[in-house]
Length: 401
Ligand SMILES: Cc1ncc(COP(=O)(O)O)c(C=O)c1O
Image 1 (cartoon, helix red, strand yellow):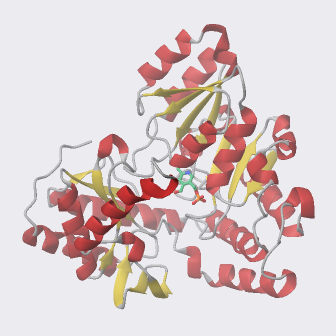
Image 2 (tube, rainbow, N blue to C red; image 1 turned 180 degrees about the vertical axis):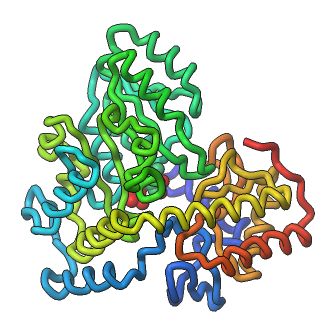
């Protein structure tokens, strides 16, 4: 097959999608009016698929911090920290994140994707083993592709399966990195973290936890599921992102292992990518302060998330297993999810359309993400749009996941 022939299949799939009127790649945010509203393809929409959990993208303190940093430091860093050096802001943010988590070390990456690549590829190598939850994010899978370690998947959230696989490893258990997420990004379900931690301790393995969708959402101080469950000391490496509750772009890893500081010298995604720009660092620092000082944002978020989940459940939609700010609405057939996405779009509600193979078990789903910034009226409008589309689209509800 000639080099570019493989794109023919991609083009066919893209054209088939475009014929239905639903092509998420053609969605253009022409104006962003607030964290929850934008003009999309010429239409004013409520945004319910943004990961903007705490609604901080327009927070005046974050905006002002970013603007000031651009004026003082310019628009970009134009190089990696290894080659070009660090800006003050990088060091300050790393110190602030380490303090926030009560950890000794923090390394900041240019995206959350790179944080997973950078940490997994640097922590593991020939002779090591990675045990990864099957539902982990693509960035975790891609990190596994960058290492010579053996990669073994365990069934999603199945601690019995994890235990069995750890036992089979024998002496290699101490060379094993277990990887899980806190809140899974597609279905919004939580990891059985206390049990995972108990197994890690029992077998003498290491644990890397991706808290991308729980930073700012869970825990008394917003540090995530490990804080909520009270097992922070047992998680060796916590990876997170600035692109969700912190409203910017970038990623990080915190740890108490002193080797963490050495990873900078060997992590290719850290070394060979330009460091985050000054405005991003500044707005992230401001967002972190807000996350810390305004716990009421979390309470509001969960109240709205539970409210919308309850409304959709009452309408007999098939939903992800538990209420969380990620609400997955599941469908049996791809055509149905496309029709639904179109219907919501026409009614001024934007959600994420997830088609196979992106979601676990080849599911087709609409992924809603709730924000603190959604007003009760907007939550009502989102629920009403779902009800209205349901009345107009013949449905065959999927089995619960
Ligand atoms: C669980 C998880 N980890 C990592 C990432 C990557 O984060 P970023 O968007 O900052 O690259 C995502 C993004 O969707 C995610 O859901």
